[in-house]
Image (tube, rainbow, N blue to C red; front, side, top):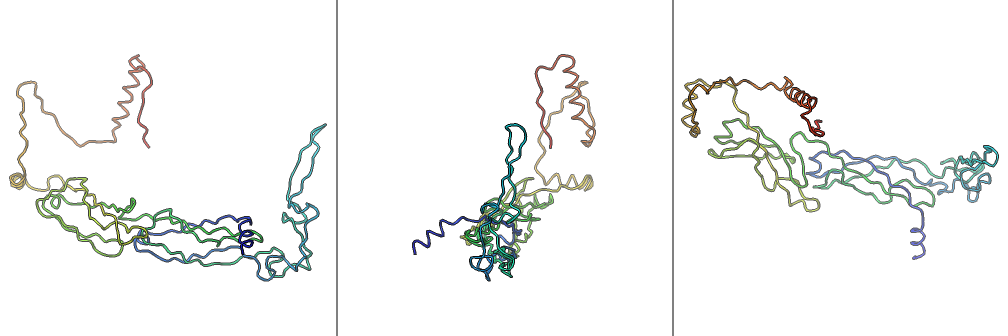
Amino acid sequence: MGGGMGGRRGRRRGEDTHHPLRVSLEDLYNGKTSKLQLSKTVICSKCKGAGGKQGAMQKCKACNGRGVKVTLRQLGPGMVQQMQSICPECHGEGEIINEKDRCKDCRGKKVKNETKILEVHVDKGMKDNQKITFRGEGDQLPDVEPGDVIIILQQKEHELFTREGNDLYCSYNLSLTEALCGFQFTIKHLDGRDLLIKSPPGVVIHPGAIRTVKGEGMPMYRNPFEKGNLYVKFDISFPPTNFASEEDLKKLEKLLPKRPKVDIPEGEDVEEVDLVEYDDTRGGRGRREAYDEDDDEEGHGHGPRVQCAHQ
């Protein structure tokens, strides 16, 4: 028994086969079983990998079983080039068999193609690029231990959630009224539940604020009853210009916190200027760089300038 195991260990091992499997974030949250159809080579069952009748397969005499043929080419006096090519007699197999002795199923190739269906169990909490290994399910060759089939999970992008570790992140856009006066809304979770998110009046939500919903992140791998957190980042939509009359704005100002006190100086040195919308298409940065170049030409620049790289 020990000798048999030692023999298997001593065999050359075949290469592993890698296959990607696209999965959604919902699949990784809820778990899923996918059936994957693969094509692989298996040892011919009729000749049991012999290629034909027992003893009919002989070592190729043309290449001495190496599968390659070496020829020497004279390049010049005392110069010889060694060239190696696939043996034309055995087509690189190193063995040869008479046509009449070949196995009719595999035509002497010793192996056949077979379609295999694997059931891939995607467990809750698995991650992008995680590997699922099927031991010994790789291509079969005579006297070679089959390699593994390795399934690599590839997570598709989700329209609402992004994942970091066991935590989920999403964004939600509030109106200014909701940000100041409270809100409630629902988020459709990955298992179909609607999470009711609420904030009472008086709790002010600032632009870019992040709030945590504990225990509503991704289930932990092999411990799915424990979950990470869900983080909601809030964006605030401000009302358009002139959304209310001047009279209503005065009423609103009475409800809002008082303005900060600003002391305006007086005299002829005070000049009132216009404030207009910023136009980022006018090339302000380009003009600034042109000024810098002029300074360099006039001898005001010292040493190389470092600029930010914009992608």
